[in-house]
Length: 547
Image (cartoon, rainbow, N blue to C red):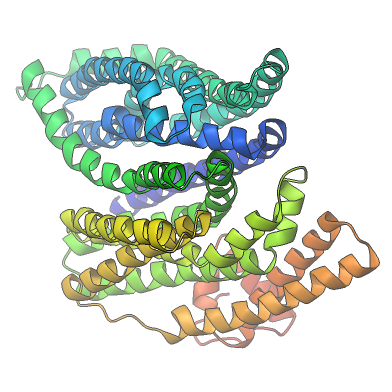
């Protein structure tokens, strides 16, 4: 019975992970035409609006799904269905009220934020974006309620609907608003407002999807509530207190993580204004919309694939299986690094063609240089994000918050020196970004070693994947330029280089025994892969191997 529940939990987690990856891809794809429409300056306005929006979202509603799911799951496991539904209703009141207030605050504060980042047109897309906070606040309660009932399908489905509508409306609205305001000096800001209007439309579509799912299940939910005759009924005030106590630690940790980008935006805007740099919004657009978006994509994939191990880690820790905890830490870190390291090297080697293919009508050289210099941040962010989950899994909830706060202070100091003293402009943002992620990595590494008594294996987790990825990078570089020499079009050359890189890297991992048969079998469709490699005589049969 316990195994069935655990497998079901992992299946649900995989559904959400796949949906998250798909949503990220959709988010990346629609930004390509959006960037081509509004330009790098317009995307600078768009990204600056999102910095304050994301912080407001975290403070008002981002933590609600986690808090609601935790409380609902706990009460449903005790068959306290009335209490679970009361958590849902109280969360709607609390989150809806706070979300509405935060939406009004962001709308009114838009001009102040624009002056803080020294970019007056930012207020236009930010005001259009502000109502989205209220919609997300309500939507988060529904998502948390269904997750607490151990079904991730409504959340996953609503995420896909949300991103699909967001993509269509963003591009269409940006184009129409740019046309309508083509005589305005703030034309790019109105285009950015079209992009933020897509976010609002997507959020409304996602909420309507969840309302539909709830309406379908409403009769069943009400019937379970009526049949609940347990004596452990909680009052509204008690439930509200439970929600607030559960939400506050999550808000604190997420706020610190988000502050890194918000601080970057503010410090960069202030210093560039002081140095009388005229194209600060253009530079911020390249950094946030190209460098940060492209480096975040492989981090999201690595994190989503590794996330399914964290719940199992928590269960193993509670059972007191110390060896099992260390095994799961080792496998999750290795799995993440097998993805993050080649992604970083591939991004650096193929930076220019990637930018040329994705953003053909915008600036290429600077964007490519930022990717080449800062791609190492992919490894640091993949490791730090995973190890945050590991520390939470071994019941060290405060450590990720402390580590992030310390790294944030270091990051602010380094960023200010790079911008003010060395005048590194947008390159300072990239180096500061690397510094923040590296700081969290080092502190999390120490925390896991201290509290899990874990000694990190280096050879097959870091050294061999790095060697294999370096060779892969050389193959990708030569393949791209070889194909481009005969057919000077970046897209076919890039696709060929990426296919060659994947085959080369995978083959090297197997040939050097960096990854074994049992590890391969743990991958999606891993058993099929093992049997295929055996038939090709590329994988020697291990004792107790996969049949």
